[in-house]
Length: 310
Length: 42
Image (cartoon, rainbow over all chains, first blue to last red; front, side, top):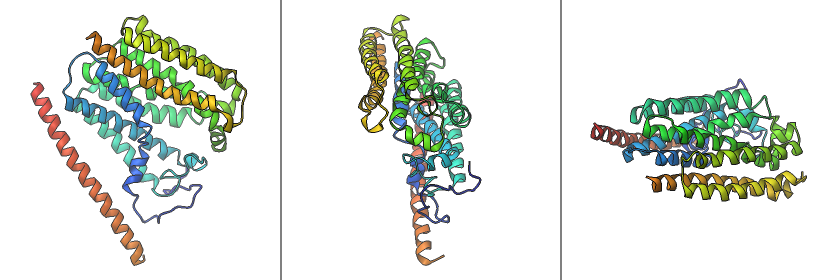
C-alpha cells in the first residue's frame, strides 16, 4: 500500500490535488452495481422471514445493508488502490485515477460502516446490526487484507462476506437466526467460487498483472475448471438443503432442481474445456452470467414459497 | 492558484454541499419515519 496520501495510479491524475473529490466519485467508491445482488438477497431474507416488520423499518434495514456493502467496497478500494492501478478493469476507479485522496476514502468507508451498523441497530435490533458489522469486518480484514493477497483460495473463505445479507434481512425481522437463513448463507457461500472463478478464467490476465494470487494464475486453468465443477457439486447440495430440510416447498424445490441442473450443465462444459484464449471463452462467460441469474431465481423462489406456505 | 482553478474548486465544493444538503434532508425524513414506526410498534 502506498504511503502517499494521493494514489499513484497507472493514469496521470486528472484533477489537481487541491480539488476536492467529486460526489460522483464517492458514489463510485461504493460499487453500486455490485450492490444489486447484496440488496436483493438481503431483501429476500427479510421477506422470507416469519413475522411482521413495519415497511419503513424494512426499508431502513435494506438501506443499511446497502450502505454497509458500500462502506466495505470503499474500504476495499482504499486498501487496494495500488493493485487497482495495475489492472485495466480497475485503473479508472477514483483512487488509482487520482481523482480522490486515500484519506477521504478511508474516512468515507469507516464513517459509512459505523453509520449503517448503528442505524440498523436502532431501527431493528442489535443482532442484525452485529451481523452487518461482522460482514463488513470480514470483507475488509479477512478477505481484502488477509486472504486476497496471500492465497488462491481467497474467494472461498472470503465469499462468506457476501453471504451475510439474507441472514441480516432475516434477523432484522425476527431478532434471531434459524435454519433457513443459515441454509441461504451456505448457498451463497458455495455459489461464490464457481461464480467468481468463471470470471477469473476470462479476466485472468488482469489479475496476473496485479500479482493477485487468483486460482487460474497460481494453479492453472485445469485446476480452476476442476474446482469450479467440484464447488458446483457442493453448491447443488446447499441449494437442495432447504427442500430436504422441509424449510421450503414445491416452488423453491422446482426452481432449485431445474436451476441447479442447468448450472451443473454449464459448469460441466467449463470443466471439460481446455481453452485458454480469453477471447474464446463463451462457455465461461455464459456460466458467469447464468450464475447471477441463478441466484436471483432461487432467492425469488424462496420468497414466493414462504409466502405460499404462510 | 489561478482564477480558473479557484472557480473549479468553488464549483466542486458547491455541488458537494448541495448533495450533502439533500442527503441530510433525506435523513431527517428517514429518522422521522423510523420514530413514528417505532412509536406505533409500542
